[in-house]
Length: 352
Image 1: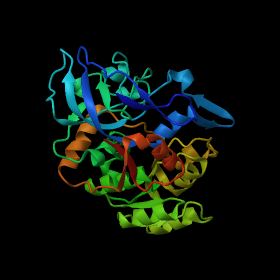
Image 2: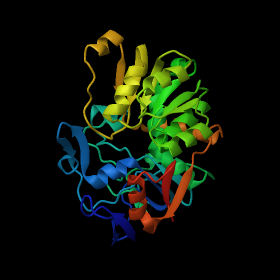
Image 3: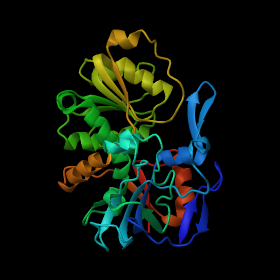
């Protein structure tokens, strides 16, 4: 089978011809229909994360081995099962939950595999969806999507799940009664905006330095779209909120400038949910955190139950689709390059 792999960090993806895997035990073999291209794949291609002050978190040191097939937003058709797999109907289309843990630690035992300290995530530690076929280690990680469009559904495994989990951390009592701030109007930002609407939210002020993405946010229903690079960005955000500071903000970028602006926008007792992995180091005055009684919460994707809840919500038809641009699977490298250059509005998805 054809796989599109990171063979060396920061070098073009290569097509490798590998043996088609045979599922064993409780495994399921899927024929890939759609694989989302995510900013996390860029960090995987780069080989690490910028921790600021000259420090880097190396993925090689954290168990990522090359060559690796990326792709953690995958929809496919169940083609074969191991002898112990149950609950799978061959020929059905499934969304794959990729954030798989060791299966034995307290996090995994509590249902929070995304918090496992020894993760075995698909597309990161194990082969992912940039391929013709993919092995899913257990049928429980498959969610039947019925007749839904695979290219629209694939991004829910990461961008949808990540933003849904962040909104849950804010809480309906806040987002249904007060507009929130969303830093970043890319694919995650647009996804977050649509989920907020589907959940009865009071709306959001979007912040992005890219005019095209701000325009996309306004078309998608944002209350306002602010240029984060403007010297008075904080004042513009508060004005767009009706003159009041924000009860909650979600930072989908995770850069020093965005976290600083988001923090400055918060009301006393407000929540800042940090998601983005752009990198760098924060320069917050520490005394302001307790003085402001702020909650700063890191949020990493979401758990399997949250993804099941999310797809159930999508099946109601309440979640408006975000812009999706599809590319043939054999254009995986050029698509990833286009995303690195900021050339994608919404989400990019590889299809077969």
